[in-house]
Image (cartoon, rainbow, N blue to C red; front, side):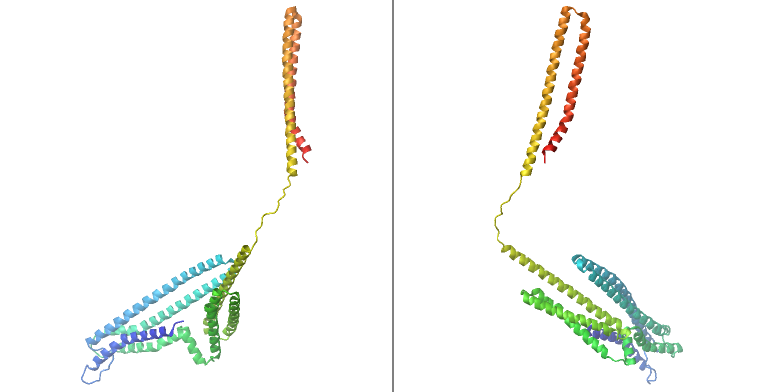
Length: 432
């Protein structure tokens, strides 16, 4: 709400500007008009059709009003643009702050989302109220142009001399009517003035209003005490008893604030519809501030619990007695037994491979023996000149040689095939 000093300063500036713009030309032109003749029979009016010097003063006055009117229109346009732009930026800032709070405290996501909706509704309401006021001032400005514009045109088109015409008199009276229309517009378009006039006309009782205002101020004072005093005591207290007492007082005051807000919600329904929205906005703002104070108290309590837990852990760590480790027994019987079985399997495989090698050596020795025997038989046949027996003997030797090679190949092949099977069978039988 605006402070009384700002309201008084604004009122003074408005009246000072009005007197400077309007009464200056009025006094000057009126004084000059009063001295037109020796006898004071001419009217002392600043907008009479008099000499040329009156016309110059009136033109300066009209130009000054037109400049002020243009400045007013520009200011209203700029105000409307600032209201729309600031509303969008405020919504973005509120969304960013709510997102950061949700990331920092995900457990309070629902209350923060509700707070975000309240902020958005508040910003929208403030934007609508500002736009409504801008429209009201636009209507007032248009009304000023409608009522005073014809008089300005007639004054500019009648520069000097002659009697006062009918057009001048009609436009002058129309301009004077504006003095009654302008307050009526403010009373009609401004919600606060309209409510005040309605209360005065309807003679409504103000007891409920005073009761609600006193309860609202008491609640606001309690909220300020909790924010500026109790939370600071809780944060700065070093003793546990002081912290507990401060938290108890703070919680008690917040309970009272919550009860007062519920009572204000009940009293809102008894207010007139014109004041209900404004009072509801104030009560909602109190609830919003109370919710933030409760969140701040919860954060302080959480920090205090963390500090106490860290202190207890540090004291427990410092008071702990460290000793040497106890005896440790590791049972390796199964691993040793398994290692022995693997060694025995490895030795059995080596023996199997050695037996195969000895068999191959025996077959090789038998082949060499048969070859030497074959050579001796051939030499003997040549000596005895047994040509008829030579052919069958050589065929028998070749058949015997072929059978020996086949036998050697099959023995080697079966030895290679049966060696892994025997190895796995041995492992399966030996390992429990």
